[in-house]
Amino acid sequence: MAERRPFREVKLQWLRLLSCDANINDNAKCVALYIVTAHVNGHTGKAWPSYKTIAEATGKSVKSIQRAIRDLEIGGWLGVQRGNGVGHNTEYRPTDASIIKASQLREKTDKSVPLNHAEGGQICPERRSDVSGKGGQICPPNLEKEINKKPNGREARAKAVAGRAVPVVNVPVSHGHMIREWNAWLARKSLPDLVRFNLNSASPGTGWYRLPGRWPPEDGSEKEQDCLSYFLSRLPAIAHQTASQTAYRQAA
View (tube, rainbow, N blue to C red):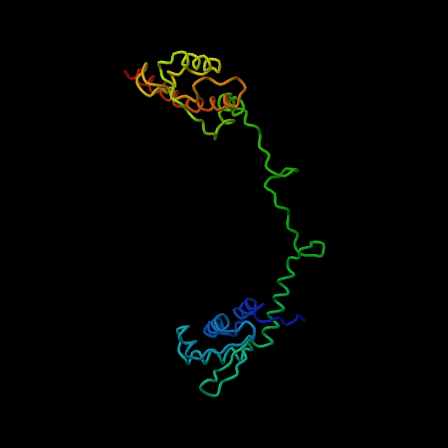
């Protein structure tokens, strides 16, 4: 025989058994559901709502509530201790017999799937997302993707130095020796010259260029990486400008 548990631990099982009792009509089940869920004290297992309170909450008449309470009492679901005046409301509590039945159902439910399958119960398969022996999904290689995947040295260098701010200075266009040094440095890095980068602040031949320094950096220095980042980040703008000009010429 199962141990009698506190009603608060078997409330759902109690309501489940009550809902399956063919000898109790729907009116009585509705009243019991309201009393148990809205008024029964979790520690004492008792409730004291008046007939009027139950009737207003369930939308039924007081006489219907009285008949329902009587049916639940006769059916062995509620123990009723009627009050004897104002300040002494009728007391309702689930009967010991009904709580023991609910405790038995709770114990049966708890034992249906034990943690250790060696002691009986259900054996749940390990969660897997594939049918391979090693686990995980096995996808065949995408040959087309591998063929089209070509390394891009410029993008790799740009990512390596991205995220670091590069200070710029204004180098006058009239300082031809500086401009020539920068164009020579860009040529060694396989990059376009300054005119293609469109860094001058005025029309070609006047104003100044906004550059990451007055002179090109030394090879292998940290500044060289900053300068590469500065120019590589501007390559997409050159490509877009070239494409636009080509489209314009084709349209003309």
